[in-house]
Image 1 (tube, one colour):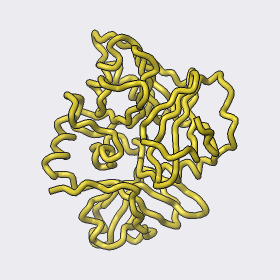
Image 2 (cartoon, one colour):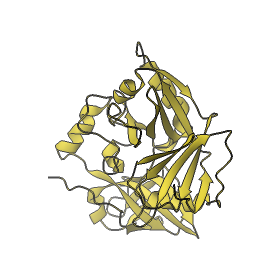
Image 3 (cartoon, rainbow, N blue to C red):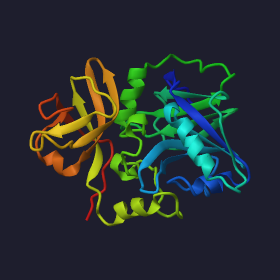
Length: 296
């Protein structure tokens, strides 16, 4: 395995363990991705939705063994996600637990570009390739907490956050729980939704958004000289009273903020977006690293 250039402990991430003969089948019936066909060479990006198709959390899942799966997600959402998933285990042979004390999650920058969600095992650790901007490489590295830290130069949180947003990914956070249908943050574009699997909570809403051309909001990237926060609203001068978007991710580097924001597609043609108010800091639209599928 080629050594990456830099590593960063992702202390704001945690891990849920699902163990038992029915673990894969249980997660398959709860999340937006296909876990029934998951192999040991790939991970899955997935969302957990309400019955109305609104995202409660987004996460990365993989098989640790034939009867154990792991889900890495922002730590702030882990307790509520674990509690809600546990309510639906019922008679399934699946035990859910918080494995955050047992496993450490690291972010790697400077890995060779690789197919997103490809998984490599390295002893007791795994490396999961993440989407990245063209020509760049990123990965999650998950290892036992007792294991020595990767012997690599440290990346900064600012560099990690910037690279993450440049990849066109925004994770659901506390401020955005139930704010988005998966496609609103381009989750299906980056491999987070299967439209070939069976039912899961919110599946009808997600499928309807995909096939009936009803989606009017998408994730976009913006830059500004002002500081921003997840949960901030965006506005346009053409409609100063109604928010035109919602910030889903923020990175600050060298005095510049990079934002990933879910916005009304129609508002992109209504002039510049502004942060927090119609006369707030102006935002400059940046290109995404992937194409958003056109709707009929």
